[in-house]
Image 1 (cartoon, rainbow, N blue to C red):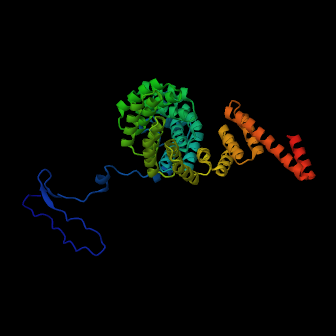
Image 2 (cartoon, rainbow, N blue to C red):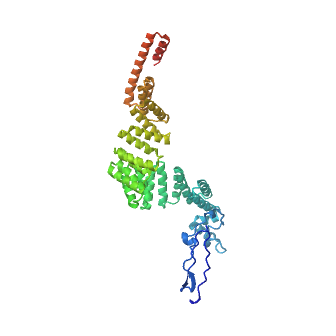
Image 3 (cartoon, rainbow, N blue to C red):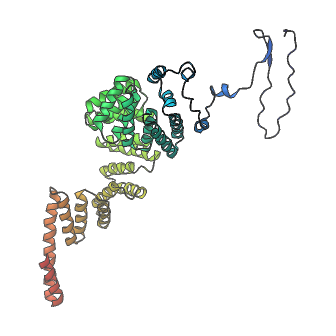
Length: 458
């Protein structure tokens, strides 16, 4: 076509109807000298240009597949290549799919099931994920990819023991992947195998020194083993690789606090809050400030934590402790009440409110709170001591004796319980003697006999 030829005629564009949306601009034509033709200078965007690549159709993963699909074209049986020696060599060097064409026709189905399980895992359809992966492993017991996907599903569901077992199967087949070692370290760390987690992190770091999660996870395992100096070194390396991870800053702050570096710990925790101002980070800094007796800063951080998540009962109790230390007993009791209202089975809130009520002299409330804490299986001997003190102040000496005896049974070294038990018994004997004297003077012989029998039983 010559350049003098006229450009294509553009159709007349109709006006947009009400509610019809915005109509794209008409194409603008220009002459292309390299390819002698008229081309549109502003073509409509296609799906490929919008997303960069074609979206995969995951729905086709469940469709059936030809049995020979896993074998490459160059390895398929022909009339000339039918010698056993040829195929023996192929079996040695080819992947699992080619071998399955000859001996295990169902492994193609295993591959499809594993892929479907992976897609279901991304969609959070855990039932379908486990069903597909279990079936894939049943069809092909040496399929390491299915074990890997199932391990990730177990980790997502919190089944860390099963995840560690699946990852062990993966590592038995291939030890070159640093991510597999790191994932098994995460599983082992979750169920308390800190030494095993450190070993797996060492393997992961040996294969990839730039793997930040491995450095961070090894530092966390060393923290649990109270090896704080080495843990700080691991966190330093992790922050060198990724200085934008708030969790690493928070963990290094806790490590420095355990080492006695209070200023460095506060700086790290503040950096974690700047990167990620969450309720957990505010609460962590509040607890660090509480240990440093910075009660005003503790109250501020707990208030921010409650502002981000008012259901976080630990923040309410931490603020109550700070207010109690400052002497604001009424506000501290109100914070404990808010924590109990949000979680009636939170033992720490009941114990703390019982202590505050004891300081306020609210003896009936002390008995109620201590009884509730004891019902929740409190192992603190002070709950029995607080209830014994409340019963002693109310004049219920026999109940006080019972409470102090239980406190000594809980903790034989509790000196307060031993002293108060002696006082309670003495007060009970004095009360009994006074009652006997008053009954004798009134000549009420029936009541006198019952009092004498009760004193003998004691």
